[in-house]
Image 1 (spheres, helix red, strand yellow):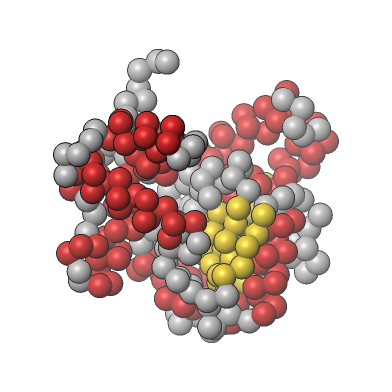
Image 2 (cartoon, helix red, strand yellow):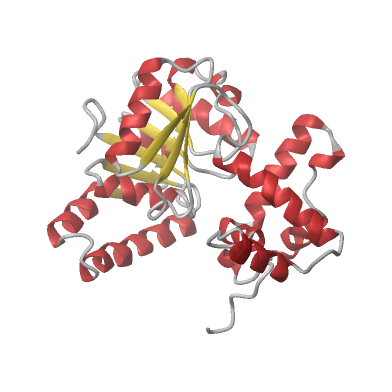
Length: 291
């Protein structure tokens, strides 16, 4: 069931997060417009939707009526103005870099109605760094989904000092209407809840690997079989995307100037080679060979 006053959602970015958030919102009953300036990304997202939705019927997860409604709800367009011009709620899911996000939020502020809430799906960048380019800082917040967004239940909503109670409560309600478990952070902190905890584990894992203490395979085996995690930190890096890890670390380094915040050498090497994990077929592990 949709949230009162929120019927049209715009998702900016049709990449690995954006197209799944779009589908989750469409299945929940919202009229969704997903936009991306990259035609190839839009085409790939649309192709995924046409196969994923019928697959839910085959697996008994959705009825044909629900799939028909979701397909009717979902539109892909390269035009930001068309996608966001009448939106009640916007979820930005573009590259994890501050300046491109600020540019998008300035554009959204210019084309969206004054009532529209502008949320960012950023994993680390707090919304106070985006709100000042808009005329509606009280309606700008973090709404962090986890990958893959169609599977993972958690959504972190961050109430920075500029965010109104109404914005935070509406964002929580929208997440829950999409079948998510929504949690509220009462103040801004880098990495939010889950990624802050994961960062501590990941830093130790990469230190052990880069120091030659153990192979990344054995570190993953230790975490999975010793801590009972579903996957190890290097498997998780491949799943999330080496490029995302690189961008997050570089944004932090640009902010602090501290060399300790730079990406690990193994991350830099794989980023330069284009070995970004599952999305490219190779990261720390090789996904190109048939299982």
